[in-house]
Length: 305
Image (cartoon, rainbow, N blue to C red; front, side, top):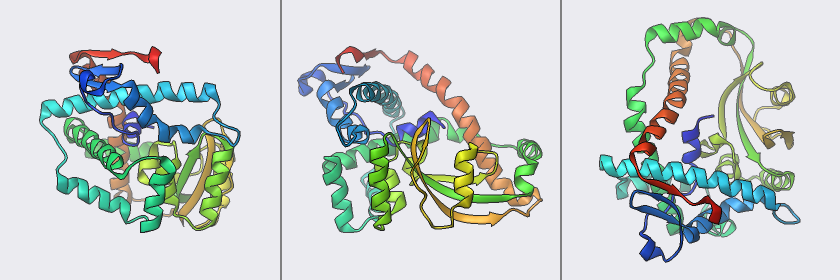
């Protein structure tokens, strides 16, 4: 679970001066400021995920606010780097990204998303723009420097040969919710025919939420047995019941099932290359972010949130 993926699904933060905002600053990265009023505005949609039928649990909300504060801090640091690199998102890039999201909804359901989350279309588009900019910075600074050599691919294949050569594999999606009540409500929406990927992007708190909950291919032995048994028993195209783990409440959908009978490395090279790059990116992200933070003047006032 990579930290940078989390950054891609949280709201972007405003970079206004204190005088213009008229509120106490919560985060400052050089001259860019996130005010308390802005923090509360951005947290409000996320807060709904922590609500129960009887109301939000105060301790859960407090912890969620602190986690969210750290996520926004990381985002502000990366966006500060975007300024140094003179990177931006063009109107055309933003329109294309908006179009990709809109194609997954009907016009009515797309509008309903903003009603449920108490967010304007304009705010959502700005948030999306910032998410795209974070991706662009990471792509230029990290991904462009990461590769997987033929030797590394061959070594990875040999070390995971059993995974590639026998047994069943499935491709699955998940929605992870913080409370049982929230999970049950989302499950009802799924049973009414609402799109799994769209609901994952809207409600899931898992890192792969931005990808519509796509977990990729899953093989036996890679997950806790309680989850694994349920996933492999689930018919393709069907949605699971709500399952509790220490991480929260899961809903799964199996999108593909097949037996693996391939034994040649050629059939897996791209997937292995992707895994190696993902692991390298996860290892490189923390030191890269820490180095950026040391370059900027960063002030965090977490006491006021």
